[in-house]
Amino acid sequence: MTEPERLRADAMRNRTAILRATEELLTRYHPQQISMEKVAAAAGVGKGTVFHRFGSRHGLMRALMQERAQDLEIAITTGPPPLGQGAPPRARLLAFLTAVVEMVARNKGLLAALGPAAPVTAVPEQEPREAHPVYRSWHGHISHLIHQQRQDLDADMLAHVLLATLHSEPILNALERGDGDRLIHTLHDLVAGLMPDP
Amino acid sequence: MTEPERLRADAMRNRTAILRATEELLTRYHPQQISMEKVAAAAGVGKGTVFHRFGSRHGLMRALMQERAQDLEIAITTGPPPLGQGAPPRARLLAFLTAVVEMVARNKGLLAALGPAAPVTAVPEQEPREAHPVYRSWHGHISHLIHQQRQDLDADMLAHVLLATLHSEPILNALERGDGDRLIHTLHDLVAGLMPDP
DNA sequence: CGACAAATGGACCGTCGGTCCAGTAACGTC
DNA sequence: GACGTTACTGGACCGACGGTCCATTTGTCG
Image 1 (cartoon, each protein chain N blue to C red):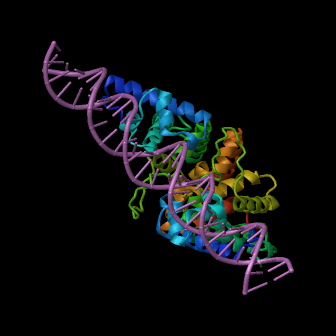
Image 2 (image 1 turned 90 degrees about the vertical axis):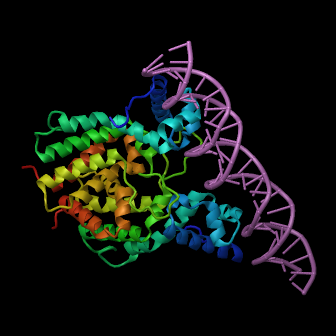
Image 3 (image 1 turned 180 degrees about the vertical axis):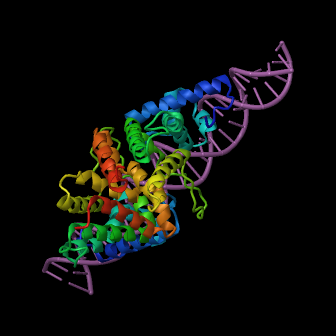
Protein backbone atom coordinates (compact mmCIF):
# COMPACT_ATOMS: atom_id res chain seq x y z
CA MET A 1 0.00 0.00 0.00
CA THR A 2 2.74 2.41 0.87
CA GLU A 3 5.77 0.64 -0.56
CA PRO A 4 4.95 -2.72 -2.10
CA GLU A 5 6.83 -1.52 -5.15
CA ARG A 6 8.26 -4.23 -7.32
CA LEU A 7 10.84 -5.88 -5.13
CA ARG A 8 13.20 -8.58 -6.17
CA ALA A 9 12.14 -12.00 -4.92
CA ASP A 10 14.90 -12.35 -2.35
CA ALA A 11 14.41 -8.78 -1.21
CA MET A 12 10.72 -9.38 -0.68
CA ARG A 13 11.40 -12.57 1.22
CA ASN A 14 13.89 -10.85 3.50
CA ARG A 15 11.58 -7.89 3.98
CA THR A 16 8.84 -10.03 5.43
CA ALA A 17 11.34 -12.11 7.38
CA ILE A 18 12.59 -8.94 9.06
CA LEU A 19 9.07 -7.72 9.76
CA ARG A 20 8.06 -11.06 11.27
CA ALA A 21 11.22 -11.29 13.35
CA THR A 22 10.62 -7.80 14.66
CA GLU A 23 7.11 -8.44 15.80
CA GLU A 24 8.20 -11.67 17.37
CA LEU A 25 10.88 -9.85 19.35
CA LEU A 26 8.40 -7.14 20.22
CA THR A 27 6.17 -9.62 22.01
CA ARG A 28 9.11 -10.89 24.05
CA TYR A 29 11.15 -7.86 25.02
CA HIS A 30 10.71 -4.20 25.71
CA PRO A 31 11.30 -2.11 22.60
CA GLN A 32 14.43 -0.46 23.90
CA GLN A 33 16.14 -3.77 24.41
CA ILE A 34 15.67 -4.72 20.78
CA SER A 35 18.72 -3.66 18.81
CA MET A 36 18.89 -3.68 15.06
CA GLU A 37 21.55 -6.34 15.28
CA LYS A 38 19.18 -8.59 17.19
CA VAL A 39 16.49 -8.01 14.59
CA ALA A 40 18.88 -8.88 11.80
CA ALA A 41 20.08 -11.99 13.59
CA ALA A 42 16.55 -13.12 14.37
CA ALA A 43 15.58 -12.65 10.75
CA GLY A 44 18.66 -14.51 9.58
CA VAL A 45 20.04 -11.62 7.54
CA GLY A 46 22.87 -9.15 7.86
CA LYS A 47 22.48 -5.79 9.55
CA GLY A 48 23.17 -3.99 6.30
CA THR A 49 20.14 -5.63 4.74
CA VAL A 50 17.85 -4.29 7.43
CA PHE A 51 19.09 -0.77 6.96
CA HIS A 52 19.09 -1.05 3.19
CA ARG A 53 15.41 -1.98 3.30
CA PHE A 54 14.04 0.24 6.05
CA GLY A 55 16.57 3.03 6.28
CA SER A 56 16.57 3.28 10.04
CA ARG A 57 15.18 1.84 13.20
CA HIS A 58 12.33 4.30 12.98
CA GLY A 59 11.59 3.30 9.41
CA LEU A 60 11.34 -0.33 10.41
CA MET A 61 8.91 0.39 13.23
CA ARG A 62 6.85 2.65 11.01
CA ALA A 63 6.58 -0.01 8.33
CA LEU A 64 5.42 -2.51 10.90
CA MET A 65 2.92 -0.04 12.25
CA GLN A 66 1.48 0.67 8.83
CA GLU A 67 1.09 -3.01 8.16
CA ARG A 68 -0.86 -3.43 11.37
CA ALA A 69 -3.02 -0.40 10.77
CA GLN A 70 -4.04 -1.40 7.28
CA ASP A 71 -7.06 -3.50 8.26
CA LEU A 72 -8.45 -0.75 10.44
CA GLU A 73 -7.92 1.77 7.68
CA ILE A 74 -9.91 -0.33 5.27
CA ALA A 75 -12.65 -0.91 7.81
CA ILE A 76 -13.31 2.78 8.33
CA THR A 77 -13.13 3.78 4.69
CA THR A 78 -14.98 1.00 2.91
CA GLY A 79 -16.30 -1.30 5.66
CA PRO A 80 -19.79 -1.55 7.17
CA PRO A 81 -21.13 0.65 10.00
CA PRO A 82 -20.57 1.49 12.74
CA LEU A 83 -16.86 1.61 11.86
CA GLY A 84 -17.55 2.48 8.26
CA GLN A 85 -19.78 5.16 6.84
CA GLY A 86 -23.48 5.06 7.61
CA ALA A 87 -23.68 5.30 11.39
CA PRO A 88 -24.03 8.58 13.30
CA PRO A 89 -20.75 10.26 14.22
CA ARG A 90 -20.98 9.42 17.90
CA ALA A 91 -21.39 5.71 17.22
CA ARG A 92 -18.61 5.74 14.66
CA LEU A 93 -16.28 7.49 17.07
CA LEU A 94 -17.01 5.04 19.86
CA ALA A 95 -16.51 2.10 17.52
CA PHE A 96 -13.27 3.55 16.22
CA LEU A 97 -11.84 4.22 19.66
CA THR A 98 -12.72 0.70 20.70
CA ALA A 99 -11.04 -0.74 17.65
CA VAL A 100 -7.92 1.33 18.12
CA VAL A 101 -7.56 0.39 21.76
CA GLU A 102 -7.97 -3.27 20.93
CA MET A 103 -5.43 -3.00 18.16
CA VAL A 104 -2.92 -1.29 20.42
CA ALA A 105 -3.54 -3.80 23.17
CA ARG A 106 -2.75 -6.62 20.79
CA ASN A 107 0.46 -4.92 19.68
CA LYS A 108 1.68 -3.87 23.04
CA GLY A 109 5.15 -2.56 22.47
CA LEU A 110 4.72 -1.20 19.01
CA LEU A 111 3.54 2.29 19.81
CA ALA A 112 6.21 2.61 22.44
CA ALA A 113 8.81 1.46 19.93
CA LEU A 114 7.90 4.32 17.66
CA GLY A 115 8.77 6.56 20.53
CA PRO A 116 9.21 10.15 19.44
CA ALA A 117 6.94 10.69 16.48
CA ALA A 118 9.89 11.61 14.31
CA PRO A 119 13.58 10.86 14.43
CA VAL A 120 15.53 13.69 15.94
CA THR A 121 17.70 15.15 13.27
CA ALA A 122 20.97 16.87 13.89
CA VAL A 123 19.45 20.15 12.78
CA PRO A 124 18.53 22.16 15.88
CA GLU A 125 15.62 23.97 14.25
CA GLN A 126 13.32 21.51 12.44
CA GLU A 127 10.29 22.51 14.52
CA PRO A 128 7.42 21.01 12.52
CA ARG A 129 8.28 17.31 12.84
CA GLU A 130 5.60 15.52 10.94
CA ALA A 131 3.92 12.66 12.70
CA HIS A 132 3.86 9.32 10.96
CA PRO A 133 1.05 8.58 8.50
CA VAL A 134 -0.88 6.29 10.80
CA TYR A 135 -1.15 8.96 13.45
CA ARG A 136 -2.21 11.54 10.90
CA SER A 137 -4.87 9.23 9.59
CA TRP A 138 -6.29 8.41 12.99
CA HIS A 139 -6.23 12.01 14.07
CA GLY A 140 -7.98 13.13 10.91
CA HIS A 141 -10.68 10.53 11.32
CA ILE A 142 -11.40 11.36 14.95
CA SER A 143 -11.42 15.11 14.51
CA HIS A 144 -13.67 14.77 11.48
CA LEU A 145 -16.22 12.76 13.44
CA ILE A 146 -16.19 15.19 16.35
CA HIS A 147 -16.58 18.12 14.04
CA GLN A 148 -19.61 16.57 12.37
CA GLN A 149 -21.58 16.71 15.60
CA ARG A 150 -20.02 19.58 17.54
CA GLN A 151 -18.72 22.45 15.43
CA ASP A 152 -18.31 24.49 18.60
CA LEU A 153 -15.54 22.28 19.95
CA ASP A 154 -11.84 22.33 19.13
CA ALA A 155 -12.04 19.02 17.30
CA ASP A 156 -8.40 19.13 16.30
CA MET A 157 -7.07 19.43 19.83
CA LEU A 158 -9.66 17.06 21.20
CA ALA A 159 -8.54 14.38 18.77
CA HIS A 160 -4.94 14.85 19.90
CA VAL A 161 -6.01 14.50 23.51
CA LEU A 162 -7.92 11.30 22.85
CA LEU A 163 -4.99 9.81 20.94
CA ALA A 164 -2.51 10.92 23.59
CA THR A 165 -3.94 8.12 25.67
CA LEU A 166 -2.03 5.66 23.56
CA HIS A 167 1.35 7.30 24.16
CA SER A 168 1.17 7.08 27.93
CA GLU A 169 3.37 4.53 29.67
CA PRO A 170 1.03 3.95 32.61
CA ILE A 171 -1.87 3.31 30.26
CA LEU A 172 0.15 0.98 28.06
CA ASN A 173 1.04 -0.91 31.22
CA ALA A 174 -2.63 -1.09 32.10
CA LEU A 175 -3.37 -2.49 28.65
CA GLU A 176 -0.66 -5.07 29.15
CA ARG A 177 -2.40 -6.14 32.34
CA GLY A 178 -5.62 -6.67 30.42
CA ASP A 179 -7.37 -3.50 31.54
CA GLY A 180 -8.36 -2.63 28.01
CA ASP A 181 -12.06 -2.58 28.78
CA ARG A 182 -11.50 -0.12 31.60
CA LEU A 183 -9.82 2.22 29.16
CA ILE A 184 -12.54 1.77 26.56
CA HIS A 185 -15.19 2.40 29.17
CA THR A 186 -13.45 5.56 30.31
CA LEU A 187 -13.10 6.86 26.77
CA HIS A 188 -16.79 6.16 26.22
CA ASP A 189 -17.63 8.21 29.32
CA LEU A 190 -15.55 11.07 27.99
CA VAL A 191 -17.16 10.99 24.57
CA ALA A 192 -20.61 10.62 26.09
CA GLY A 193 -20.02 13.80 28.06
CA LEU A 194 -19.25 15.70 24.89
CA MET A 195 -21.50 14.17 22.27
CA PRO A 196 -24.96 13.64 23.76
CA ASP A 197 -26.84 10.66 22.41
CA PRO A 198 -29.32 12.01 19.84
CA MET B 1 12.84 18.12 49.87
CA THR B 2 13.70 14.75 48.43
CA GLU B 3 17.46 14.74 48.75
CA PRO B 4 18.82 17.97 50.16
CA GLU B 5 20.77 15.79 52.60
CA ARG B 6 23.85 17.39 53.99
CA LEU B 7 26.11 17.74 51.02
CA ARG B 8 29.64 18.94 51.08
CA ALA B 9 29.99 22.54 49.97
CA ASP B 10 31.63 21.75 46.64
CA ALA B 11 29.23 18.90 45.98
CA MET B 12 26.27 21.18 46.56
CA ARG B 13 27.72 23.82 44.31
CA ASN B 14 28.29 21.34 41.52
CA ARG B 15 24.85 19.82 42.00
CA THR B 16 23.11 23.09 41.31
CA ALA B 17 25.55 23.91 38.51
CA ILE B 18 24.62 20.67 36.78
CA LEU B 19 20.92 21.27 37.29
CA ARG B 20 21.14 24.79 35.90
CA ALA B 21 23.24 23.69 32.95
CA THR B 22 20.74 20.97 32.16
CA GLU B 23 17.75 23.27 32.11
CA GLU B 24 19.67 25.72 30.02
CA LEU B 25 20.47 23.01 27.46
CA LEU B 26 16.88 21.83 27.60
CA THR B 27 15.63 25.19 26.39
CA ARG B 28 18.03 25.09 23.44
CA TYR B 29 18.04 21.53 22.15
CA HIS B 30 15.78 18.55 21.89
CA PRO B 31 16.25 16.22 24.83
CA GLN B 32 17.72 13.40 22.77
CA GLN B 33 20.52 15.59 21.51
CA ILE B 34 21.65 16.36 25.04
CA SER B 35 24.29 13.88 26.07
CA MET B 36 25.57 13.53 29.57
CA GLU B 37 28.97 14.67 28.34
CA LYS B 38 27.45 17.90 27.06
CA VAL B 39 25.73 18.44 30.39
CA ALA B 40 28.99 17.90 32.26
CA ALA B 41 30.88 20.23 29.96
CA ALA B 42 28.21 22.93 30.20
CA ALA B 43 28.29 22.70 33.98
CA GLY B 44 32.06 22.82 34.00
CA VAL B 45 32.52 19.48 35.73
CA GLY B 46 33.63 16.01 34.75
CA LYS B 47 31.26 13.36 33.54
CA GLY B 48 31.99 11.21 36.58
CA THR B 49 30.69 13.95 38.83
CA VAL B 50 27.34 14.02 37.10
CA PHE B 51 26.90 10.27 37.46
CA HIS B 52 28.18 10.27 41.03
CA ARG B 53 25.51 12.78 41.97
CA PHE B 54 22.52 11.64 39.93
CA GLY B 55 23.25 8.02 39.17
CA SER B 56 22.00 8.08 35.61
CA ARG B 57 20.53 10.23 32.92
CA HIS B 58 17.11 9.38 34.18
CA GLY B 59 18.02 10.34 37.75
CA LEU B 60 19.19 13.73 36.56
CA MET B 61 15.98 14.43 34.68
CA ARG B 62 13.89 13.23 37.57
CA ALA B 63 15.70 15.50 40.01
CA LEU B 64 15.10 18.44 37.72
CA MET B 65 11.45 17.51 37.39
CA GLN B 66 10.97 17.28 41.12
CA GLU B 67 12.54 20.66 41.60
CA ARG B 68 10.13 22.18 39.11
CA ALA B 69 7.12 20.43 40.57
CA GLN B 70 7.78 21.53 44.11
CA ASP B 71 5.95 24.84 43.95
CA LEU B 72 2.87 23.24 42.49
CA GLU B 73 2.97 20.55 45.14
CA ILE B 74 3.01 23.15 47.90
CA ALA B 75 0.22 25.12 46.27
CA ILE B 76 -2.18 22.19 46.24
CA THR B 77 -1.41 20.95 49.73
CA THR B 78 -1.13 24.16 51.77
CA GLY B 79 -1.98 26.99 49.39
CA PRO B 80 -5.24 28.94 48.98
CA PRO B 81 -8.21 27.83 46.85
CA PRO B 82 -8.97 27.05 44.13
CA LEU B 83 -5.68 25.15 43.86
CA GLY B 84 -5.56 24.40 47.58
CA GLN B 85 -8.25 22.98 49.79
CA GLY B 86 -11.52 24.86 50.17
CA ALA B 87 -12.93 25.03 46.66
CA PRO B 88 -15.32 22.43 45.20
CA PRO B 89 -13.63 19.48 43.44
CA ARG B 90 -14.53 20.64 39.96
CA ALA B 91 -12.96 24.05 40.45
CA ARG B 92 -9.89 22.53 42.06
CA LEU B 93 -9.47 20.09 39.19
CA LEU B 94 -9.78 22.80 36.56
CA ALA B 95 -7.30 24.98 38.42
CA PHE B 96 -4.89 22.11 38.79
CA LEU B 97 -5.04 21.11 35.12
CA THR B 98 -4.47 24.71 34.13
CA ALA B 99 -1.47 24.97 36.43
CA VAL B 100 0.02 21.72 35.18
CA VAL B 101 -0.34 22.67 31.54
CA GLU B 102 1.26 26.03 32.19
CA MET B 103 4.07 24.39 34.07
CA VAL B 104 4.71 21.91 31.30
CA ALA B 105 4.53 24.62 28.67
CA ARG B 106 7.20 26.58 30.50
CA ASN B 107 9.43 23.49 30.70
CA LYS B 108 8.95 22.27 27.20
CA GLY B 109 11.41 19.45 26.80
CA LEU B 110 11.46 18.20 30.34
CA LEU B 111 8.63 15.70 30.19
CA ALA B 112 9.92 14.39 26.91
CA ALA B 113 13.36 14.02 28.40
CA LEU B 114 11.99 11.73 31.07
CA GLY B 115 10.82 9.56 28.25
CA PRO B 116 9.88 6.09 29.42
CA ALA B 117 8.64 6.41 32.96
CA ALA B 118 11.35 4.11 34.20
CA PRO B 119 14.74 3.07 32.92
CA VAL B 120 14.60 -0.22 31.10
CA THR B 121 16.56 -2.73 33.07
CA ALA B 122 18.28 -5.73 31.61
CA VAL B 123 15.84 -8.01 33.36
CA PRO B 124 13.21 -9.14 30.85
CA GLU B 125 10.46 -9.52 33.42
CA GLN B 126 10.20 -6.45 35.66
CA GLU B 127 6.64 -5.70 34.61
CA PRO B 128 5.49 -3.20 37.23
CA ARG B 129 7.84 -0.30 36.45
CA GLU B 130 6.97 2.38 38.95
CA ALA B 131 6.33 5.83 37.58
CA HIS B 132 8.32 8.69 39.02
CA PRO B 133 7.06 10.45 42.16
CA VAL B 134 5.81 13.54 40.39
CA TYR B 135 3.54 11.51 38.15
CA ARG B 136 2.25 9.53 41.10
CA SER B 137 1.48 12.70 42.98
CA TRP B 138 -0.35 14.33 40.10
CA HIS B 139 -2.29 11.22 39.33
CA GLY B 140 -3.32 10.79 42.96
CA HIS B 141 -4.49 14.36 43.19
CA ILE B 142 -6.57 14.24 40.02
CA SER B 143 -8.19 10.90 40.71
CA HIS B 144 -8.99 12.02 44.26
CA LEU B 145 -10.78 15.13 43.02
CA ILE B 146 -12.75 13.19 40.44
CA HIS B 147 -13.74 10.60 42.98
CA GLN B 148 -15.04 13.25 45.34
CA GLN B 149 -17.71 14.28 42.89
CA ARG B 150 -18.32 11.18 40.78
CA GLN B 151 -17.94 7.87 42.62
CA ASP B 152 -19.49 6.13 39.64
CA LEU B 153 -16.57 6.90 37.34
CA ASP B 154 -13.26 5.08 37.00
CA ALA B 155 -11.34 7.94 38.56
CA ASP B 156 -8.05 6.09 38.41
CA MET B 157 -8.15 5.47 34.67
CA LEU B 158 -9.63 8.87 33.98
CA ALA B 159 -6.72 10.53 35.75
CA HIS B 160 -4.29 8.55 33.62
CA VAL B 161 -6.10 9.64 30.48
CA LEU B 162 -6.01 13.29 31.45
CA LEU B 163 -2.31 13.10 32.26
CA ALA B 164 -1.54 11.18 29.08
CA THR B 165 -2.07 14.49 27.33
CA LEU B 166 1.31 15.61 28.57
CA HIS B 167 3.18 12.64 27.10
CA SER B 168 1.99 13.21 23.55
CA GLU B 169 4.47 14.56 21.04
CA PRO B 170 1.92 16.38 18.90
CA ILE B 171 0.50 18.09 21.97
CA LEU B 172 3.92 19.06 23.28
CA ASN B 173 4.57 20.56 19.86
CA ALA B 174 1.34 22.48 20.12
CA LEU B 175 2.41 23.80 23.50
CA GLU B 176 5.69 24.87 22.01
CA ARG B 177 3.76 26.85 19.43
CA GLY B 178 1.92 28.69 22.18
CA ASP B 179 -1.34 26.78 21.89
CA GLY B 180 -1.48 26.19 25.63
CA ASP B 181 -4.84 27.90 26.01
CA ARG B 182 -6.37 25.69 23.34
CA LEU B 183 -5.30 22.65 25.34
CA ILE B 184 -6.58 24.11 28.59
CA HIS B 185 -9.86 25.00 26.95
CA THR B 186 -10.21 21.48 25.60
CA LEU B 187 -9.45 19.90 28.95
CA HIS B 188 -12.03 22.18 30.53
CA ASP B 189 -14.60 21.01 28.02
CA LEU B 190 -13.81 17.42 28.86
CA VAL B 191 -14.09 17.97 32.59
CA ALA B 192 -17.25 20.01 32.15
CA GLY B 193 -18.83 17.08 30.35
CA LEU B 194 -18.10 14.81 33.27
CA MET B 195 -18.49 17.00 36.31
CA PRO B 196 -21.56 19.20 35.91
CA ASP B 197 -21.34 22.60 37.52
CA PRO B 198 -23.36 22.39 40.72
C1' DC C 1 23.71 -17.03 -21.45
C1' DG C 2 25.47 -12.62 -20.38
C1' DA C 3 25.30 -8.20 -18.37
C1' DC C 4 23.51 -4.99 -15.35
C1' DA C 5 21.12 -3.46 -11.40
C1' DA C 6 19.79 -4.64 -7.06
C1' DA C 7 20.49 -6.95 -2.83
C1' DT C 8 23.56 -8.70 0.66
C1' DG C 9 26.31 -8.95 5.01
C1' DG C 10 29.71 -7.97 7.98
C1' DA C 11 33.65 -5.02 9.03
C1' DC C 12 33.90 -0.55 10.51
C1' DC C 13 32.92 4.21 12.61
C1' DG C 14 31.42 7.76 15.89
C1' DT C 15 28.72 8.47 19.92
C1' DC C 16 26.68 7.55 24.04
C1' DG C 17 25.47 5.93 28.83
C1' DG C 18 27.78 4.26 32.42
C1' DT C 19 32.04 2.54 35.29
C1' DC C 20 36.44 2.96 37.61
C1' DC C 21 39.90 4.66 40.36
C1' DA C 22 43.78 7.53 41.48
C1' DG C 23 44.18 12.14 42.90
C1' DT C 24 42.24 15.90 45.59
C1' DA C 25 39.88 18.84 48.59
C1' DA C 26 36.41 19.63 52.38
C1' DC C 27 35.18 18.67 57.21
C1' DG C 28 35.64 17.16 62.28
C1' DT C 29 39.08 16.62 65.89
C1' DC C 30 42.59 17.94 68.83
C1' DG D 1 46.89 25.04 62.43
C1' DA D 2 48.07 20.26 61.42
C1' DC D 3 46.00 15.75 60.42
C1' DG D 4 43.47 11.84 59.19
C1' DT D 5 39.21 10.45 57.35
C1' DT D 6 35.92 10.66 54.09
C1' DA D 7 33.54 12.19 50.21
C1' DC D 8 34.01 14.39 45.93
C1' DT D 9 36.19 14.88 41.38
C1' DG D 10 37.23 14.12 36.49
C1' DG D 11 38.79 11.93 32.64
C1' DA D 12 40.35 7.51 30.71
C1' DC D 13 38.03 3.61 29.61
C1' DC D 14 34.35 0.02 28.27
C1' DG D 15 30.58 -2.30 25.87
C1' DA D 16 26.67 -1.54 23.02
C1' DC D 17 24.27 0.61 19.62
C1' DG D 18 22.60 3.03 15.26
C1' DG D 19 24.16 3.74 11.05
C1' DT D 20 27.60 3.61 6.83
C1' DC D 21 30.43 1.43 3.32
C1' DC D 22 31.65 -1.46 -0.18
C1' DA D 23 33.34 -5.79 -2.16
C1' DT D 24 30.73 -9.72 -3.37
C1' DT D 25 26.67 -12.34 -4.66
C1' DT D 26 22.26 -13.08 -6.80
C1' DG D 27 18.00 -12.31 -9.21
C1' DT D 28 16.08 -10.48 -13.65
C1' DC D 29 15.46 -9.65 -18.31
C1' DG D 30 16.60 -9.25 -23.13
